[in-house]
Amino acid sequence: MSAPGGTADDAPGAGAGGGPEAEGTRCEGALAERIDALAALFERRILDDRDKRRLLDEARDGPYRQYLHPMVHRLALLVDRLDREAGGVAAPGDPEAVDQGRGGAGPSTAGETAGAGGIDPSEEVADLARSVRDELLDALAAHGVREIRTTGPFDPARQEAVSVDRDSGADPGTVTAVVRRGFAHGDWVFRPARVTVAAPARRR
Image (tube, rainbow, N blue to C red; front, side, top):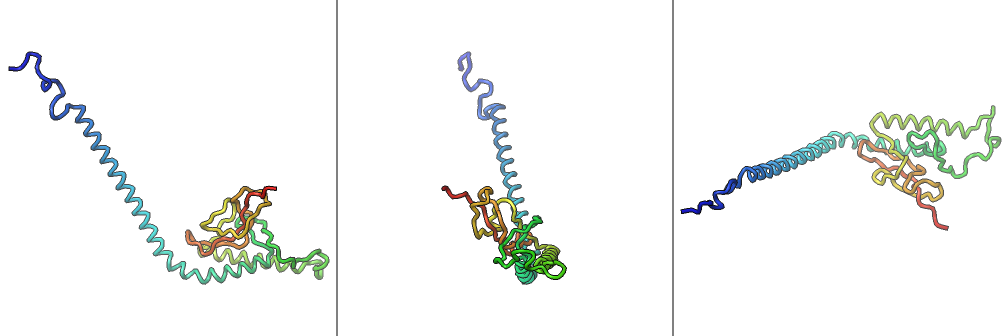
């Protein structure tokens, strides 16, 4: 015969089920696990889709880029020669050419090289070189081959630093001059741009 006050087993909420609160906690835990599993599945699907798109892009662009490679190689070398004739490399979007120092071969005064009518032959050659160079760059762009950006911070994935500049006053790591143009087709870098990069000034 049980005591008048009853036992612990008779208390409300007791028993194997643990009561409504325990049942709610279990449901919340199961729901959280389900949400985590769905989130992981969604992330995997996104990554799979991204990889599939990359493979499709490579399958689509690969043969075309192989076709482009010899043409871009020849035209890029010709652009390099025209840049030297034009007096320097102008950064993409920069109307002012970066002087490459034409070995001191330029005229010292206008009077020394001015031809008939006061026209400077060397300037005519430079203008012609710039005109032909721009047409070649337009032809490359028409095939999806673009110049690599050479303004702002140095990008090791698309640029090659060939010298440092400690006297420009620019922020360290900033491109200060273009030595040779670089070209890319989408994310494929045909050749990196060769640049000069600002470095901290030497301590005196």
